Length: 69
Image (cartoon, rainbow, N blue to C red):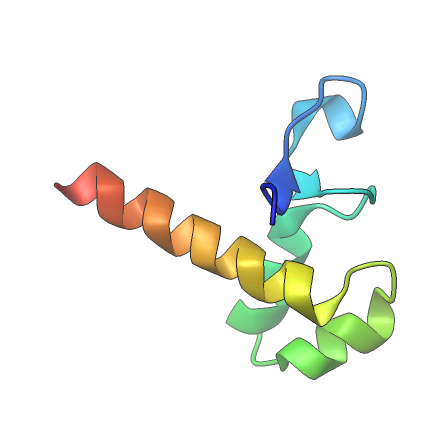
């Protein structure tokens, strides 16, 4: 899968969003930090597929790990 998260200056001022949507990735992290489940996020934002959400979390994890090396 191509990057699940994209940055485009024409979408939310360049804030990272899920590919093919205008849903900021930060919304997912806010849900998870607040104790909500992935399913609750997906119910509220049906334009984001489970596959994209999981891929985005994996991309974020890999990005973080690569900065720690």
